[in-house]
Image (cartoon, rainbow, N blue to C red; front, side):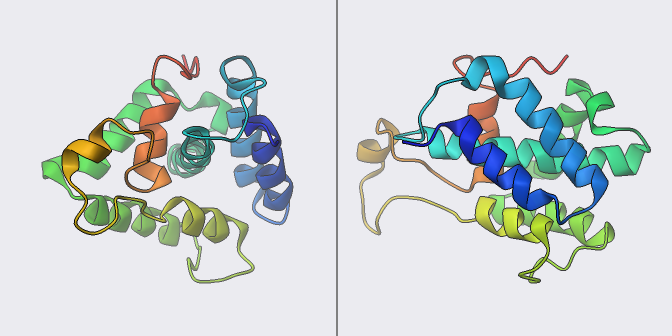
Length: 168
């Protein structure tokens, strides 16, 4: 069975075709995940954790470019502000996705380009998971079944106490 860090290493290897800043963002995410994610297998609720790590990588990449710093210099306060801005005004997940996509497009990415490694990860972490149509909410609220896409649900998992990365 694949561990979370093994999955992230695979995605990082694919990132080598992308910009240097993207590669550095992957390095930072994997470095931060060494302690909290070591040995954790990709099963049950952990695939969303891997996707959350990819979302964190994406934030490092965007903020490093926008602030003219290295991904290792992006702070937790900046990450939190980024997430708050994306969710401002009670934005739906779809509205948040548009906000993230605007920033990635501003960095020169065509999010439909199959050869763009940033776009490939973005497509992966925007797949929205949810209950089957007509499922009662109370059944799904207490289950291990994931809700939403990796760029929102996964980030919540990355910063949850059981998996939390020490960002600052």
